[in-house]
Length: 314
Image 1: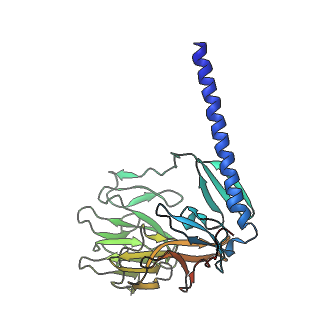
Image 2: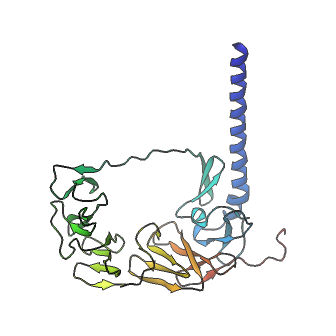
Image 3: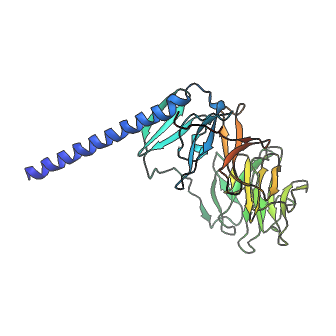
């Protein structure tokens, strides 16, 4: 029994020492290979460059004029961008870099996130209820579970789907329809970025396949211009990356217009946001052009690529 206890104690100490060594190794790597090499640059001066190795997303830091500052590491550029901090993963640890300083924390998996319980309420003939933060709490059984509350003119409304017809419309908490958004739409989404307390814009799709953005006055924008629904998983901050077949573009979901209209020459990937504050933040997009190395472009289409080096080891 004593031998078993001693073995377990030694095993614990070995694992503890191994974990400590791994942490110190990650710490030294991040400091020497990243922090020390970029500490003399402001976050707005740092961009990312790509170097393929056939295995993963290998991006490193470069200056805005293309000077390579660090070797590439297996990360996507959005995690390296200072917005306002950069996040670097190394083994079980995450390094948060802020300016010339950085901190290290052990990464914990299976983090539980508090959620709002929402359920059908059989006592509600129609309509829905929200809490003080305007989050959905319950809804009538006549609707599907895709209800999205929002505030317009100081009042709460929600985009709802009627179970009996599978059609979408807009209702208030009592179930009254906000005209002209009756349950006649195949799909409908509230456009948060383009809406405010005084302005309401909705994405719609009709049975005939027509899509677009519509406001309360019936004005329609971007009729049949989208490659895919622009207000779901493809949305990156204020921009929707649109890709279908060989077409690719970037849609501005705040101003409801194309930043880059769909075309076939290049393919846009995720957005990269660099800046410590919204006022200084700059926006870039990852671009894939045929079989060339991916690179970044800004909102004006200007490309940012690393300068060629005569001798990489120097």
